[in-house]
Image 1 (cartoon, rainbow, N blue to C red):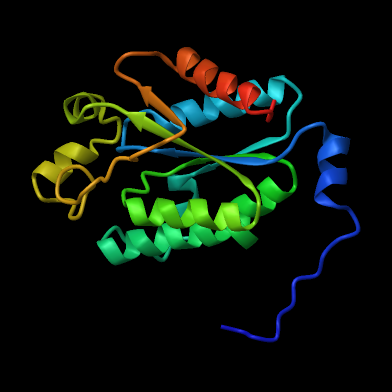
Image 2: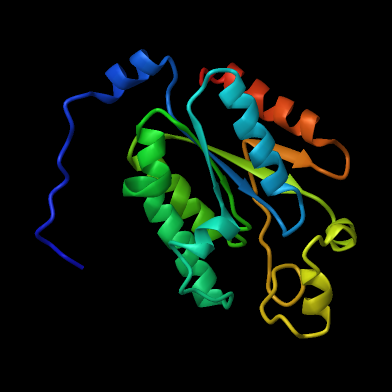
Length: 204
């Protein structure tokens, strides 16, 4: 890693940027099994925030893997590296840059490991940036029924190796800021729950 790189601060302070944009940045980290509803909620939340005149941007797991992380597979080491890159992104690259720019940075990643999500949280806290973990929860039986990409079926037959929830673990959040059961509420209710949290904690 290069050691001769120095961060170059801009002329606009975080407080000034937040005041001018009339919002302060926060990373809204949606985690949960494949087909739990993360991406659907993230898209709806982004649209809702934009319609409220807020600066918001969505980072989706599949989309990031098509570009930034296209060299990674789905074995445990690759999953850890995937979240490390997004986690580092939260501090000095992608999500953190959006967050630091007073943006609502909405991420939708399975991010199956507790330690990785803890690291991302700590990186945000160290940079004094807002972080909200949203556990998008649905029973395995429900997500297997949804299975829009047919991934669970392929994992059950062994065609896909190291698939979260089948042949690889998912470690649920222990104390998420928000817990959404998508087998008990619809997308509108999920967005409302997140929005109410953002309002009550001064982000909206």
